[in-house]
Length: 210
Length: 220
Image 1 (tube, rainbow over the protein chains, first blue to last red):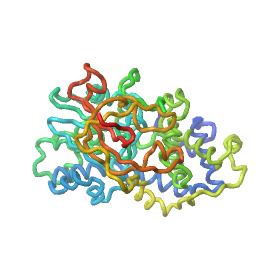
Image 2: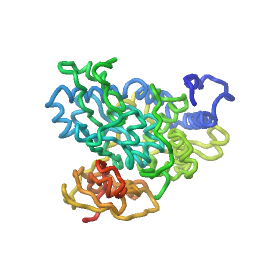
Image 3: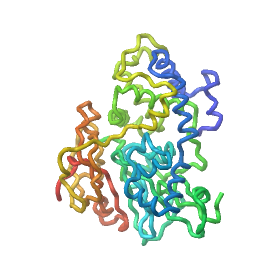
Image 4: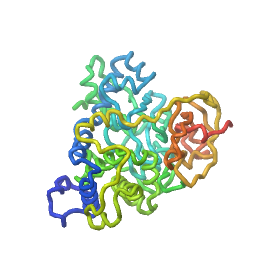
């Protein structure tokens, strides 16, 4: 297991680094020395995904979709353009599609072949999304996957799995929780978890708003 | 290729284990691995399809026992060696021993990063002909076993589904991954029932949608 202390390993003595950390450090120093990469550009990439691009982006899209029927229509017609209205787009979100959960159908997104994921709205994927158990099981036993997340759906709810085999990236719009009538978008967005936008979870109930 | 990366439907990996309050990165080296992969990709020496194929071509036992960033950094190292940008002696010496070679694009500066990431790498392409299939058509995923890169998972090959959406023209990874050009084709969202994919024991409420390039499909 990694601990938060690993985050400081850049400052540590050589001997404390794992073999892969040493390899990455050596590779970076060779690439910088040869002028192939600019270390400040690397920092800018990291900062983007550490602080700017993450699942709060997607939560804003979902909250808007719940609040504004005209926006939901635009998402259905051209999700890439509608998501760009909120300022989100670019790498691994170039071709977006939304899939809407209903009482009749729940949606679950996977990439069985690698780790394709809608970065522009969800940030970088969690480890479990890229792991063999998830990629293997999602397409054959999605209810079993949901059980691993503590989610149980009625048998009457069908499950559609979206295997991201091409460059389209899928964002699940979960069902709006009961008891949220009249809530503004910020309050609604706080209920939208990352996992609910992959389909591996559900939004928080109104009573559990953070 | 019929590689271990093609995991859909395999068994025995155990449960999915979500990590509560998972951090974006688990170690400093993961941050650098991500950034190096993106920054080197921006040099234009290989496509995203080639980098995916390089990852899936790693030794199977390594692939299955490594974290995803370990897979990324191993594949990046292979790509850099393949392009002659970094040599094995340099990796062993942990320093540069030869001058850099010219790359197709110059390295991005920090100030270029926001625009670079905002632009991304759109893969849709204009098509001249008309799509061969239409929404509602019954199609069969061809039985193919290419030695190179493909995005048709094994579990769908030979199975019959229904075209749900015509997605437009997209770069064909099976060609582009091997430097044979973008060769764009029509792409279709095809939906298969769980029973078609997995047999009578499958969850009756299950269906699976895949995006399939035209040459993966035949009329059923």
